[in-house]
Amino acid sequence: MTEQNPRPSNAPPPQLGRVAFHAVASGLTPLIPIPFLDDYALRQVRERMVRALLQDHSLPTPAKAVSILAGSQTSSTVGGRVLGMLKSLALRPVKKLFRKVFLVLWVKDCVDMASYSLHHGYLLQHALSRGDLTALTLGGDAPRRVHDAIRAACKEQDSRPVNLLLGRLFASSRLLLSEATQALMSPLRGQPRVPEKGEEAEVASLADRLASALWEQRGYFTTLEERYQKHLRKTG
Image 1 (cartoon, rainbow, N blue to C red):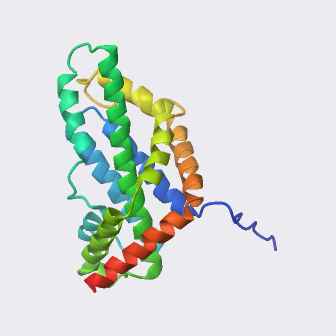
Image 2 (image 1 turned 135 degrees about the vertical axis):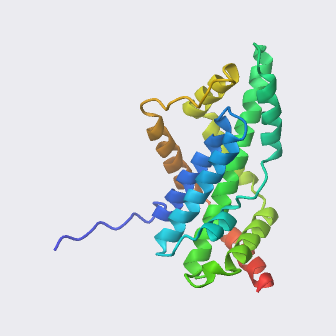
């Protein structure tokens, strides 16, 4: 019988890689230059992440619970609202300085979106591993309690270390810069540009790099888990 090679101790677990992939995908949604479609795409990515994590634990995916756990009612960030206004203003040629400011704001909004999905996805995975959600409780108040505890823990956590990591990751992304520039210069095109060959691979590469970097920040996430557990007890 052939023995399977164990995962190297320094390699991130597959669950973290899955969360990282959806975090990167969330971070790219502000690049969609169509009003409201970017928010819709963000909700879809977050809900797909929730369903994937539930399925990893052989749990059902009721629509109401998925919506709650994904935070689908969460409003867009301040950066997102600013970008919305800028998109509406970018209807004529802009100066080089304005383009630079626009790109900086866009990268920040990408980081905000990715950070939200990353922290929430990580803590949802932690909650599922602890058994805080089961097939029986998914139809009750448990999803709201878990989501509220996740939000409280994230609000309490200083996310700057992870946000800086995400900022470096996105700022070095050729895909992000290309999409941002195209969206800025053609804000009224009918639909997002069709991904070119190799771009899907870059998203996966960004996710792999993110998962590896996060795995070296285990102390940060241990603190995040402790805060989640504290807030969950308060709701019990």
